[in-house]
Amino acid sequence: MSGDVWFTILPDGESGVAAARLLRPWATETIAHHSGRPWLLGSWPDGLVTVGAAGARRVAVIGRCPVTAEALSARARRLRDIGDVEGIAHGLAGSFHLLASVDGSVRARGSASGVRRLFHARVGGVCVAADRSDRLAAVTGAAPDERLLAAHLLASPLPYPLDDRCVWQGVEAVPTFDCLLIDADGRARTQRWWTPPEPQRAWREGVPAVRAALTAAVGSCTADGGTVSADLSGGLDSTSLCLLTAHEQERTRPAGAKLVTLGWRSLDPENDDAVWAARAAARLPDSEHVTPTRDQWPLWYSDLAALTGDAVPTDEPGPWVRDGARMAALCRLMTGRGSRLHLMGGGGDELFGTFPPYLHDYVRRHPLAAYARIRTQRASQHWPFGQLLRQLADRRTFGQWLAAWAQGFTAAEPSSAALVHGAPRRRGGWSCACRRGRPATRPRPCRACSGKPPRPPSRSRPSADSTRPSCAYGPVGVGCDYWIR
Image 1 (cartoon, rainbow, N blue to C red):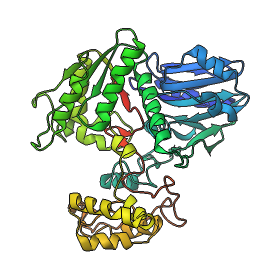
Image 2 (image 1 turned 60 degrees about the horizontal axis):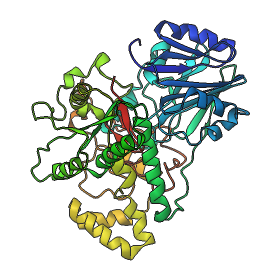
Image 3 (image 1 turned 60 degrees about the vertical axis):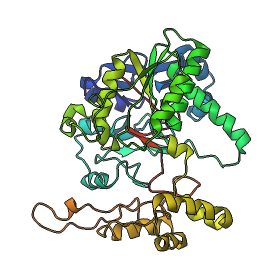
Image 4 (image 1 turned 135 degrees about the horizontal axis):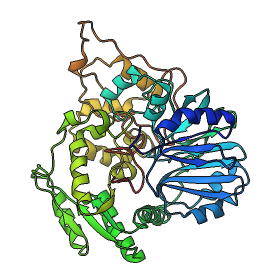
């Protein structure tokens, strides 16, 4: 565990002290409850954890957030009980875990986007939470859940409702919109802390609000000054982040502020992203623009053999595997120019674009307006007309669709449109039989998928392809970034 960035959260009781003894051999940092018992154990760099204190109340922000310990302490003074945490955290920008310790009770949660995840397991007989599932698995000796690992071969990250499941047996993931409450005796329960708001704002109100949120998120990246780097692919998402970053650096003028952009040339001669990237770069005259040569920029799936053991930076499989060599090249290029943090536009399409399944509902609510959109999608995707009509007429619920997908797991890959709840995954030819020549079995719906229809991931139509935004390192939210270490 040493050398990685991780943290665990312990209850404020004698049982938590016993659990701390099991974790302490790997920990390099510790932060105590007001009682003096260990609250946070782990390993993290300076500046990653900010703690505010007011009497017996403690509030911690772990991640990227430009709040100071003094400002966080002022917020902690307004904390009456553990239920007030979200109220005092209102207005904090960035991407972080939010923790509190109040009168023997502990509360912890990640981010609504799913970037900052939280897990929990029984360690020494009590509930211990952590930001990494593999850390809990290591201390408890948990084995991988082979069924979930197999599912990751079909889709990674997993589609709803499996996306909040953990690949380690005995380690539970806290649902994205829930927080974890741990009492002094080490008992734990989850509670909803965020619910997607109703879509009630008109665009004239919504556009300024989105801009303000993006500006605050980018501002949390530039607040510490120094060199910050960002992708500049020419797409709408990364281009917007670059322009906002330059604007924030100019507006706030933090010490040593500099922006370095990273672009790359597509192998597709019809791809015009480079043209738009050049236009954006012309509007950033004070920034350094880096475009690696083809020798410096690996292809997808390069150097896969290197992604083993300690070289793998995450605690479960993910779609970043195809980009592993590119991420390594990116880090070399940007750290070589002094960058301390890199911003990416991954997730912008999912946040601000639409996916085909919305047409299934839209055609019922606005049939005339839907006609033009369906025609455009069909032309761009080359959907067969008959299969398209069958998809639009499909009235199955999400649970029924998911069960049918499991039953048709061995069928040939469909060429039809994915307008019901997403594109069904099919088993590849490599999985037709196991080593002993026995035919592979069909997947059985797990408890998360069977019985009661699963709760949709949002108030809109659930989609197996777009339940949460995602990028090379997992789900993302507004202002996606990762630290360069």
